[in-house]
Length: 259
Image (cartoon, rainbow, N blue to C red; front, top):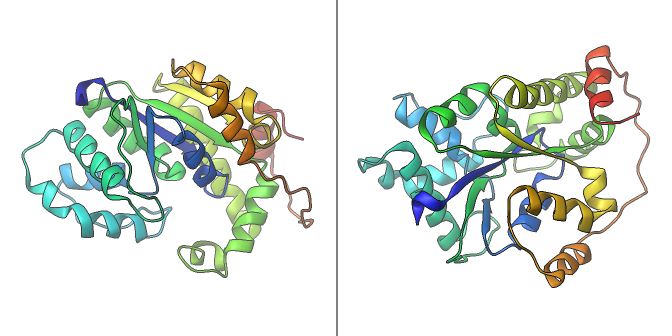
């Protein structure tokens, strides 16, 4: 069964809706996206014999939880891809973070939702060297909404501290970095990337997810699409945010038809 599983990773910047997208993807019986196991960063450090540390663009929570639950698996003599499948399938069947335990006998795609980590060039290279061809689902959101979400989340717990002391322009720079990393996956590493704008997912969920499933060569029912549509909660009440859009950010925005 393992040989038939294709790695699938959400990439982009944090606070772009990746948790929401992961839950939608998991409605499909042939997909499982974990809730932040930090699996690629964990395996990269393990197989390169590095000390386990949090990713530079993330908190330690997912990594620490994975090590707490699955450190003993790392003692087995498995290839990186076999280890990836084993830990991720255990996370699926055990339940991980806020996700309940589940089983998927027809599983075809397996991955994690850490978008900034997953786009890190060294992790993309690690996958290219050790995994079968991966699929990447690129979720992008207007930078003003990303920055607004980061600043709103900043005072909170569970990782919000990452943005608590960051200025808005610094977060914008991080957004540009993440999006340029995604561009590298597309053009330099020649990997398969599916683009999805958060705004399209919210406003046109059925068309958006049909495109995703079609690109993954997965079948789907009308009832699944309706379930997805029913999960959408639109929020048009957004606080204004003053943000100077840099030239670098503008170039990214133009690639995805943002004004």
